Amino acid sequence: MNPLHACLFATATAAVAAAVEAPAPYPPLPSPAQLAWHELELYGFVHFTVNTFTDKEWGYGDEDPSIVLPTDFDADDIARAFVEGGLRGLILTAKHHDGFCLWPSAHTDHSVRRSPWRGGKGDMVREFADACRRHGLKFGVYLSPWDRNHPEYGRPAYVRYYHAQLKELLANYGELFEVWFDGANGGTGYYGGARERRQIDWATYYGWEDIRRIVRELQPGAVMFNGPDVRWVGNENGIAGDPCWATFEGGEFGAIADRRRLEHGDRHGRRWWPAECDVSIRPGWFYHASEDEKVKTPEQLVDLYFKSVGRGASLLLNIPPDRRGRVHERDRASLVGFRQRLEALFATNLAPTAALSASNTRGGDPRYRPARATDGDRHTYWATDDEVREAEFVLSWDRPVRIQVVDLREPIELGQRIDRWAIAAETPTGRVDLAAGESIGSRRLWRAERPIEMIRLWVKVGSSVASPLLAEVGAYAVWAQE
Ligand code: FUL
Image 1 (tube, protein in one colour):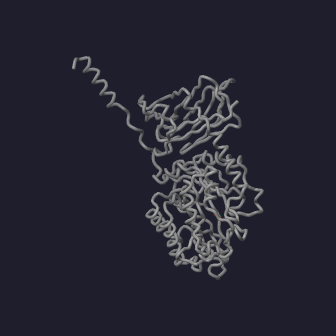
Image 2 (tube, rainbow, N blue to C red):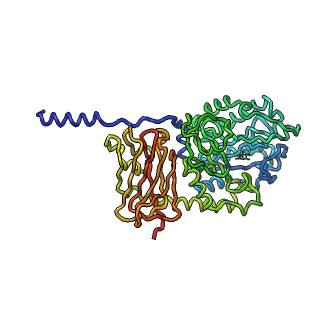
Image 3 (cartoon, rainbow, N blue to C red):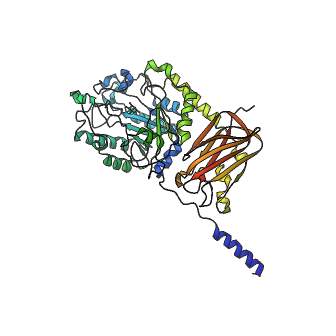
């Protein structure tokens, strides 16, 4: 090797050796099951049981199983409606507070086995599980801890029964993505004929540590709602707080009564406990013909999407089948309209067409260049040097574009790092501040009332607790732009 070559070789080796390390994670971090759950963002609930036939929201527990006779039950058609609405999973009320089981449980007679539906040989949980698989939907179950039918409710024997039922559901219906533990307990019930009030302590009665073990063992990929993995958002309106941090201090198994904290999370909490927003497409959770005129419109659903998914939470939208065992036509029309509106809003991402620059790129290393945030892959990201806490990411177009939605994501596998963000645009009339906020996390969406013409979009990180990272920056034009 001549001296010049030797020198070049040494420089190249030094450059490789100096290649920067990946940014260190900023804990707490999501578990693999939580990460998979974050990807879903939008999924649906099915509330269907004796209440569908008694026109109630909470059954007392003394309902005769023979009333459960849907005239045209079709789980495939319900799953199809979910797909038409853009939902990616389905959670079924396998047992609501009335205690009636939609599957032929070996542990009680109070189930579909005593209904005339399918001649007493039916299994609705099975039909839903199979239909979900056929239609590419993830499947989950709701098993109400409160049981107004069971004679032993309030005593240790019921807890054994509840755990046995949970095992039955978790072992026999394939892979589940979520197990839903409801927090409600109104006290009174039939309780095998006692017809009295039975009060329990939610936090200690149900044996949550055993429940956690059962779920982890039988369904390691499932998250527990209102348990260690996913928190209730503190309201049933489908709206996350702003900000909505995925981190939380304490809590688990419904021990948190402070709804405001549930809505917003705790910025410096030591657990990854992201929020799920549950809401019904109708006023009630169960189908009531009297609410046919009150189905949420597609635009109302889009608004909820931006206020839940768009704040880093997930949206669990309830679609209660009617007495036929079908999704009512009005709900279906709203679902289709909802999906079409979302598709139109997210059809044209102009971020990949922009020239990109940033105030800092980690070690000048192309692996962390700004284009990593516009490549449609949420596992690659733009990163800055370790000491950076404030940064700017700029998108410039050579011709004016009309942007209506801005979409930001952090690579949450490295923690929730950004504390403050803002977006601004260079418009024909000058620089305009568009929006500012605190949390980003899994996703932060901003939507303008009408498209805004711009040639430049600034995404500013105002502060962060560790070097800021952005996995995705999207800038969506309206479809059908004139
Ligand atoms: C609540 C229940 O009491 C409602 O009936 C419904 O199931 C809703 C999703 O959760 O706590």
